[in-house]
Image 1 (cartoon, rainbow, N blue to C red):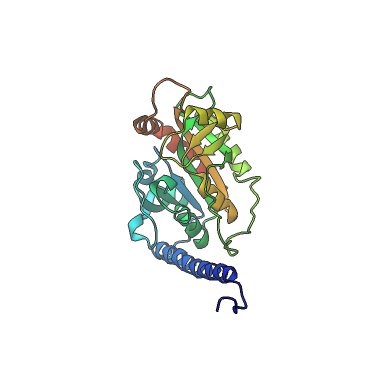
Image 2 (cartoon, one colour; image 1 turned 45 degrees about the horizontal axis):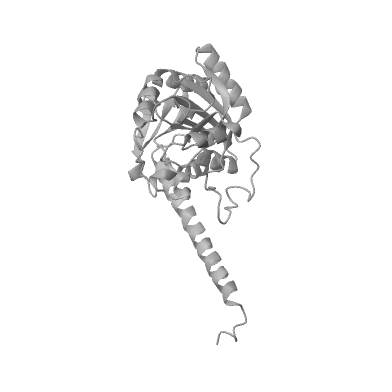
Length: 300
């Protein structure tokens, strides 16, 4: 019976897998649309904001400062994952900040929480599909460059993603972007210059730098930090890069800021701790919120 088959068994198996992938792609699109339609239904006729802010540690107060139109807990949005990381509220806020309408993601999703990679960047694709044009990513990060003094800020101008499982793995979704997207300019240069101008006027310490992504949840070892420094990294963290790659793939403008909350492993004496990160981010909250507000205010 097997010898009589016109098509080899291996080809049949590959075809079956590809067929399943097409079905999954269609279902994935449906889930993106369900989430997007639900969010848009709460705008009550308002235009979709063009900016989405992803609030890392210390930036939660922005959701209280803004003039809120609505707040949606993630568990109410169809097919959205729920954030489990400490300090991440897990809600989408829509409102006016510095005179501009924005979405604010109060909490994000990390690989270390156990989400599949397509869930981590699900919200980015939803934002793009409903009309958002720019994503501003913020995070708490460990300082690799030895001259850093926490808390200070880094405008991310490039990244290292060697540790990342690609968010674009699998069949390409042609409606969202090309199969092999260029990564030469993931982070918008004009926005980086604007961040520098805002920081200077606010007397906030901000430099440009390269962000290295690691999966976590464990902190990096001293040997890993030495390797990352040799490769040109200035800071390190467990987020941002998957979202930046996804947004870049879809042609969104990407801006990213790290708050250096601690020095990375092996630079100073003593162990790293989550408490240090959260405490330093909280101490820098006024500055980080002021920087983001001023940046949004000056955007053309």
